[in-house]
Image (cartoon, rainbow, N blue to C red):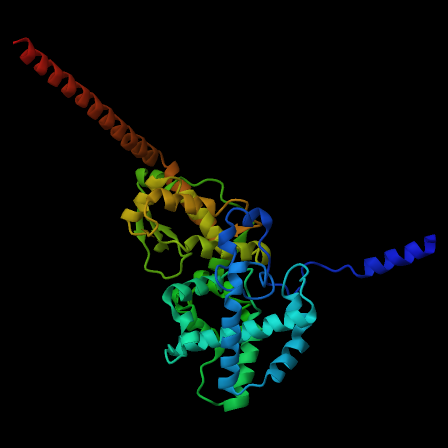
Length: 419
C-alpha cells in the first residue's frame, strides 16, 4: 500500500467523525461515575423505552409483546394507519437520533421500529390511565395490576428510558386530528401526561407551550422547582458556592427554629427572624430514584441551571446524622417511610457524591450566609455552648448518680448478707 493510499484512507476515516452530543441532544446515558453509585436507580425494571435499553436485559423482553398489543390498540381505536406513523418517524429519524447522546447501535429500520412501538404503547397507556378504562381484555388488563403500574410509572421517569416528547405529542395529535378533526373534545397529550404523573405535580402547574418539555424526566424536574408565582430573581445563579453551613441539630442548638413552609414548591426555603422555613419532603423507597435521575439530567443537560442539585446540596449539609433526621421529623419537615432515621440520612448524603457544580443558586447562597451570620452572633455562640455543656453535664451527672445508686444497692445487699 502506497503512502497516498494511506493518506486517502485516513482522510475518509476522519470524515466519519462526529460529535457525541448535538444541539438537539436531551436524552443521555448517565455518566459512569454517577451511575455506579446505584445502578438500579437508572435501569428500568419492567419496561424498556427508547433505544438505550432495548433488548439488553432479559427481564424487559417479556413486556415487548404487551407494548405491541397496546400500540395496535391505540392505532385501531383512533383509526390511524401505520403508514402515516412510519412516514412521520422516518422523516424525523435524523432528528430523533440526534436527541440521544453517543452513538446508537440500532440501524435506521430498527430505530424506526423501536420508536413506533414505544410511542404507541405510551399513548395507549396514558389514554387508559386518563379514562381509568377497566373494560379490557384479560391480556391487556394484566398491565393494570397496581404493583406493575407503579413500577412502569417509575421506569418512565428514568433519564436513559426516554422518548423525545415532541414525537409523542405530534403522533398523538395527528392520530386524533385525522379521525375527529381539530375541534374535537379530546384531551391533549399534555393533559394525559399530567394525569399520568399527577402525583409529582405538587405545584399544580399547567403548560401553554409544550416545547418547554424535552421528555418525562425533564417534566418531573420542572414539577419540583417551578411554581406559578416564582420569579426569575429567585432562580438567578452565582459563581459563589456554599462554603459552610451547620447541621440542623447545630442550628437548633444556636436558636434557629424550624418550620414547615406552606409553599408547595420544594425549593422554597426561607430564613427570617430566626425561623428557617422548609417545604415538607416525603422520603420513601422511590425518592432516591427520582432525585438521582433529575440530578443526572442536570449534570448532563442543565449544568448552569442545576436547581435540584442545589437543593440536595443544602439538604445534604443540614442532614449529617440520624439526629438531624429526627429533628426534621419532629418538625414535620421530613416524613420518613424508609423505616429508620439512619436509612434516610444515608440516602440523602449519598445523592451528592461525584457531582460537579458550575454555579450555585443566589437565593440559597444568601440564605446560607444569613444563617452563618446568625450563628456568628456572640450571644448565639454562648447560648449554643451553654446548651451543649448543660446536656453534657446533665448526662455526666446522670451517669454518676446511676453508679452511686448501684454502689449503694450493693452495699445494702452486703449488709444484709453479713447479718
